[in-house]
Amino acid sequence: MKELHRKFGEMEYDGLITGLNPPVRVTGGAITKLSAAAELKRGTLLGKDSSGQLSVYDGSTTPEGILCDDTEVGTEEDVPVVIYAAGCFDPEKVTVAGGYTLTQDDKDKLRSFSIIFKAATPAP
Image 1: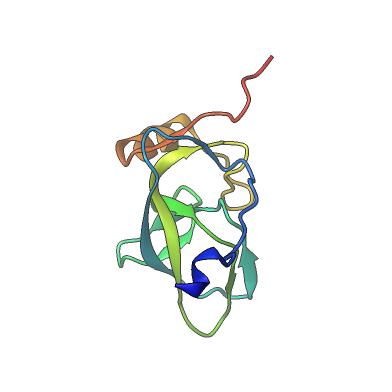
Image 2: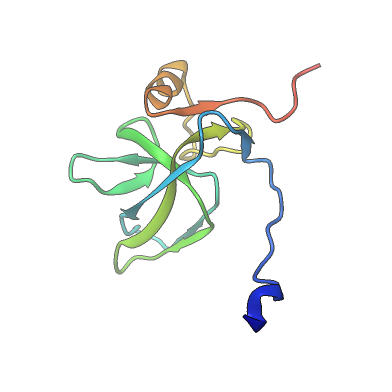
């Protein structure tokens, strides 16, 4: 009972999550090892291939979820990760593979999984 008052951690608001509906839901997965090590940032949209492995979404896979935490992905083995499988997110904070831009079709697919996009602040 002595430890009930101790500070456990901190959270800094980064604007990725912009609403309470639909409720945030998390799940797990594994990101496929890369040809060159890289750090994937929180907010990276991940897609799932036919074998169930996750990779940075580039339009060629099925959109699956949004990376919860910054993650180092190496060249040796797949990396287990936690992803947001549902929630309301700022489209300006979500990243995809270089050279790819999210389409309305992508957003519609994600909406069917209860991932929606809403800007944190309305445009003027």
